[in-house]
Length: 169
Length: 212
Image (cartoon, rainbow over all chains, first blue to last red; front, side, top):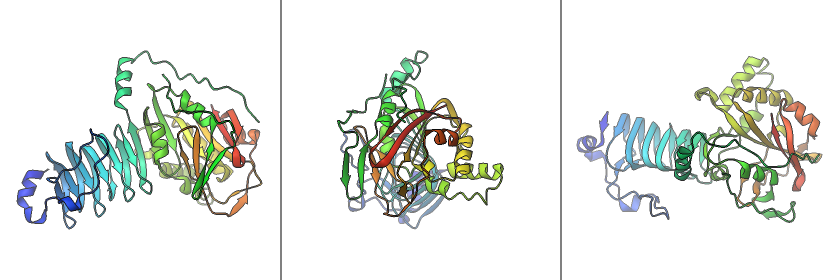
């Protein structure tokens, strides 16, 4: 298992701090969506990691990662140049590059127009930009519905369709 | 509790909003159906088109699981010569739809769009037979059938829009002969599904919703 802080110390020469001018546009017009800050960690384009990645800060991936990425409560950005084969758990996941693996986003998953994803997504909100490639499944459970669902478990009415039964032809 | 899609029926059902890369048409049956879905229930949806934001938005207020295999082209290219046995055909569907990775889907909504017009009859029947293993008993099948002699040479790309419309992307001007499925032939093709409701839309598309 790779701890991101230890990783930073050991290969600091190959890891650069994420600079303002390189920052992808992840700021949404929502006050509750965290933007990736200047101090996010970056895995450079020449880095290839095999193993489990964990940590306590945001992460930008520009290189290759195979394994798992667990950054609960933080954001993960898979940049255009990145190739990732991993299951990801994070607060918000933004994909601009290639990903083969499942994503569990506590807040949101965004697949940009350059993104190419093969896997399954579990997140309350999912955005798929025009041109983005996605094959897999998406599980969504809006928070307000989830709450109502939990309250009403056992008393949910059957699906009653009130559409008419006429056949036009 | 039902979903609300701000669906306001248009005065003219054949009203089209055209733009360069496509056009919007009203799809009343689809939106009546979406409005009738119960929010608190879990829904499993299969959309065979390449994934797009339209279907995600349409179901974003539901507790749901969307299967988006983006397999329309793969289904059209299934070669019956290569899949000359039921077993081979079954494997082709499994590979195309990706359900082998899933524990067990329990679909209650299936969007086929205009795919049935383009699939070989045996492949279409095989697909329904295959999907029956992954369906909820209350499953609804939604599709469009071309009613003109000629139809676009390849299946359309559709996207669900708000206000009771769908967006249909312009394809090439090439056309092929339409199979012209009428209701009885369609029910034979999609056995054991029965037509629940149908409506002729603009552009010669007949909208259908079917159930078991």
